Length: 285
Ligand code: GLN
Image 1 (tube, rainbow, N blue to C red):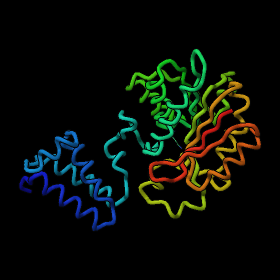
Image 2 (cartoon, helix red, strand yellow):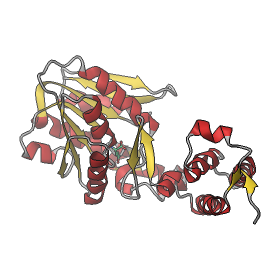
Image 3 (cartoon, rainbow, N blue to C red):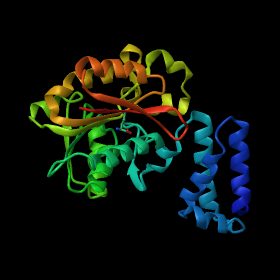
């Protein structure tokens, strides 16, 4: 096929995606990736010809996305989180923008904790985004991260190495390896699996078929991971500490109840995300 201009390639892809009920924004992200240009460069190059081999590779990816729902992040091999690129694959949850808000909350709350060196634990680290970002943004802290999946830990370790972050990774179930190592944290943070199994049918193929099941779903209406972590937390916390969780937007009340059972005197609050949905539960102990 003859070379096409960039805007023509983009228009073809956007229309093709729309026709198949996929987000047309995917076209822009993928084409930038295949051209190896930034977003601002991309908009200045609309009238340029796209080399045929680049256009062909791009079209193959667009077709694969339409056909199977494979996420762009898997096609590209990375996602940007808090301004840094993290390697992702089928073994880890793709980083979500909501989780940036959780990280920001922890960074801001860390200022209020008096300690010479903060000990921070990220539970169910997946690609490592939370632990690695905190280690880089709070360089005076000591950061640990746990996961039960060896495949996820391999991705997280690779990300920590690529981004030169000093994180200690521990394999195990939620806080168990932290308890075994007798680590006492000032901050425990987690974005655990929180989707109820009964909601599986309403989730798009891009998520359900590609994010690991272990990263998405939890028993007991999506609350099982919180119950486990809160149950283990007393053995892994400093006397004064912060717990910060990402939550599903309907889970705030249930999680408050779970926390109050174990920590009756704690100060628990819910914080909304930029879409005004309940997204973070933060606990001062
Ligand atoms: N902590 C990782 C993230 O926030 C993984 C979360 C998960 O697998 N549920 O992306």
